[in-house]
Length: 445
Image (cartoon, rainbow, N blue to C red; front, top):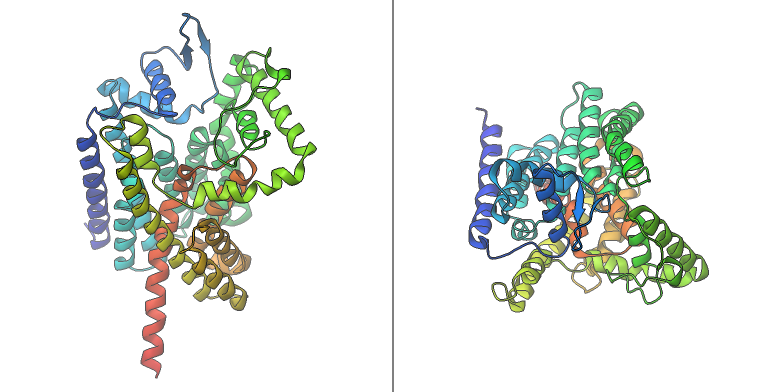
């Protein structure tokens, strides 16, 4: 085994140990909470061979597609083999988290050296938000792992670019079956793998992988879609009284007598568009609040545990966990800003200005400004420099698409976690390059 592979094995071991320790501590004390209640129930039905269906209190059973199928299907596989248990779900989440850490190590190795790769992998392995979220029966851990793996495939090596584009298209498709908005990354990561042809191949493979589920929904719920919740989510962030974060949908008179997942979602989408077009400035003014809800504070792992069992994880523990995760993520963003400022490429003055502004906001309550500043600084590198710095590009694509999607819909801290492996890896790489440049300057004087 090569030294780099030994390092990768060590990263996986550390990531697994940290996550399995949390799962062992959690045990069976934390039942499914929040959306996890539905993911768990849907997975259990799939594991029993009952299809993607929902059993209602009155005994009725309906075919559903409101929640994307990807995560329940992954859970169902584990439930089928090992039994239906929150511990089984937690162990599976731990394995997925270890894959994200391994991908971070691979990304670091692809763009830097062995020591930086090891540091990158360990930083993701011990990321406080990702580790504490392991018992959560939620989608973000799986999505983060799939996005990190796709970025690794897109960036690592120059051999067989079309094969790599096909593989990352498959990974992004699976991520799209978990969170449909990640499909936006298929052409962007494909560009990194093999230029325009790679983008086309990645999109084609992603479409082929997703096609059977779309076809199923065409006949099962009368809508050719990955899930039937886009109208709901748009209305959450557009309805009168919207705050930018999640809130229950207020059902309008026009939708009260509408039944069925697809028709209800369509009605909600129509109402959302009507609310936006009637008060576009009010909707636009909610964008900062949506981004703040997504990027200002961490702590979703602790919050999930508190929702699940407040006695076992009291509110003061949520505050401590949230503070630790927020500090970690703010430091990572600040390090990425430094890396964007010192990277080789055009518009250095603009990048430095954005990095300074972003760094200031990284220690202020409005951390979302730092994230947008980072996206702006990375975008200033331009296409040619981003091709030479693919980790910068992958981070820009992931962070930028996340910000864009939730500026339209609504925000929540857990949505930022899908970019955590890439942001953390870029932060470690950026610090290493800054130290390298400083040593060169010192040697020259």
